[in-house]
Amino acid sequence: MAAPLTVLVPVTGTVIDVSDVDDPVFSAGLVGPGLAVEPDDAQGGEAVAPITGTVVKLHPHAFVVQHDDGRAVLVHLGINTVQLGGEGFTTHVAQGDHVERGTVLVSWDPKAVRAGGRSAVCPVVALEATPDDVTSLAEVGAWAAHGEELLTWA
Image (cartoon, rainbow, N blue to C red; front, side, top):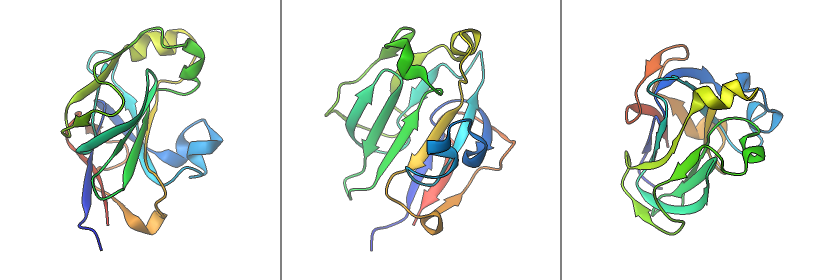
């Protein structure tokens, strides 16, 4: 059995329940359990690696970091942001890079995403986990800075 994995807050903002995300794929837990963060306009523009591992998927609007033990965490920057075609997002790493937790992976502007009529909420999901595998370390409704502890994955 793998050691518990602590997942960090990827963007600074307010923690919300993933069931409140306005996207059924995330709110229904179809890709896995987790939490979400409503990013702050001023401080939420840097997305950091939630765990140490390898960047196995990298899009301007989303990334997956896989731990050495095989567990992987998805961070999605906003809802329907794939439609932006990468505009307004800057990646700072490449797919295949090994990153330390807390490393800035993507810069973006959540305020501009909202101004374009999209949600800037950021689901943080433990891929292929069950709800029983994940425990929240951050209180829903609380302010959290990127790099703080968000959840633990048993």
